[in-house]
Image 1 (cartoon, rainbow, N blue to C red):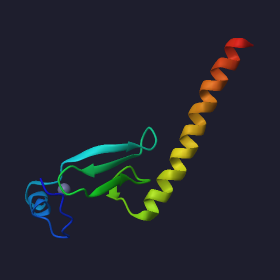
Image 2 (image 1 turned 135 degrees about the vertical axis):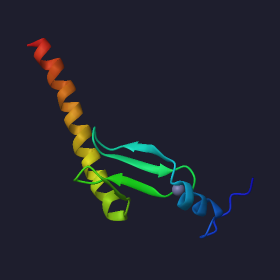
Image 3 (image 1 turned 45 degrees about the vertical axis):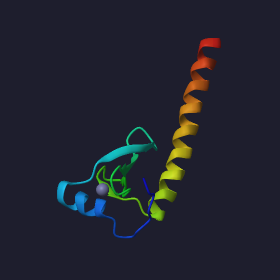
Image 4 (image 1 turned 180 degrees about the vertical axis):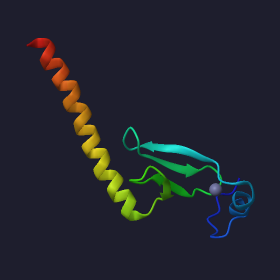
Length: 87
Ligand SMILES: [Zn+2]
């Protein structure tokens, strides 16, 4: 199987006809996720309105920030749970 990087792959045409086969590639937060099409590798993400949008570099940046905040919040929640049980 050749791993060609042609800009116009026949898979893209399959997607245009049958629709994309998105799978979750990253859980950014509980609500925000990143998706990649298994077929043409097109990337989508959840935007602020909860709908899907193209994963642009701008959105990647936003998601990275969200993920950092989200992870910190989870860590704090875990920590406070431990603290409250100790107190
Ligand atoms: Zn696709």
